[in-house]
Amino acid sequence: MSSQTSRILLIEDDAAVARLVGIELRHAGFEPEHQSTGHSGLAEAAKGGYDVVILDLSLPDVDGIEVCRALRALSDVPILMLTARGSLPERVEGLDAGADDYLVKPFAPAELVARLRALLRRSRTASDTPQQAVVNVGGLHVDALRWEAAFGSEALTLTRREFELLRCLALNQDVALTRDMLLERVWGFHYGGQSNIVDVYVGYLRQKLAAAGAPRMIETVRGVGYRMRAAEHEPAGEAVHGE
Image 1 (cartoon, rainbow, N blue to C red):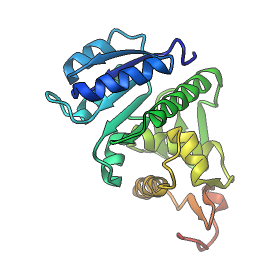
Image 2 (cartoon, rainbow, N blue to C red; image 1 turned 180 degrees about the vertical axis):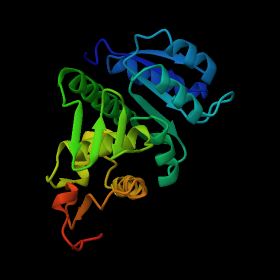
Image 3 (cartoon, helix red, strand yellow; image 1 turned 90 degrees about the horizontal axis):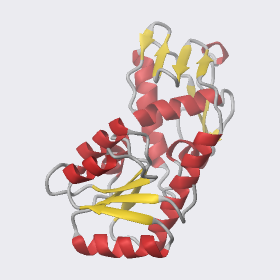
C-alpha cells in the first residue's frame, strides 16, 4: 500500500475544512472521499476499500465518539480523529473508542499527511508481520485470536487499547520498554512529548489486574518506562512505584 494509491475517507461537516483537507490529500497523492455526516460516513465506510478514515468528532447528526465505535465494529481500518478538544481525558475517550491517532485543530496540513503515512506504515507492518497469538506470563493469559485476557480464572474486561498495551508488555516480558516505545508499538505514533497517556493506561491495567487478584506485574522502571514480570519473579517489596 502506498500514498499514491491509498483511499482516504474524510468524515467532516465543515465544508471549508473538508475542501482544504481534500486539496492537501490529493496533492500528497491520496484519493480522498468526503462525507459530511456521521450516518453517511458510516454508510460509505461499510462499502469497504478505504485505507484510513479521518473522522471529525463534532458532527451534526451523531456524536463522533459513537461514530468511531461503530467504525471500529465494522473493521480494523485505521482511524485518525480531528477535533478541537485537546485535553488528556478527551484524547483518552477517543482512543478508547477505537481511534488510532488524534490530531487537534488547528493543525498544519503537513502534519496531517505525516500522521496518515505513519498510520499506513503501521497498518502495513501489522499485516505483514506475524506475531505470537497467545501469551502467558505467570497467571496472566492473553489471547489475541479470541481477544480475551484473564488472570487465573478471572476474565479481564479491557478496552481495545488496554488489551493492546497489556499484550505488548506481555510479549516483551522482563524487558524495560520506554514510553516512546509503547506509544509507537501500541498507538503507532508520538504525542509530541505528551507521553503521560501511557501512564494513564498503565494505571487502568494495574487497577483491573489487581481487581482480578493479580500481584503488581507491571513495574515502573524509573527514568525509562515499564516492564512486565511474572508473579513468581516479583520482589518481596516493590522497589519503585512511580517517578
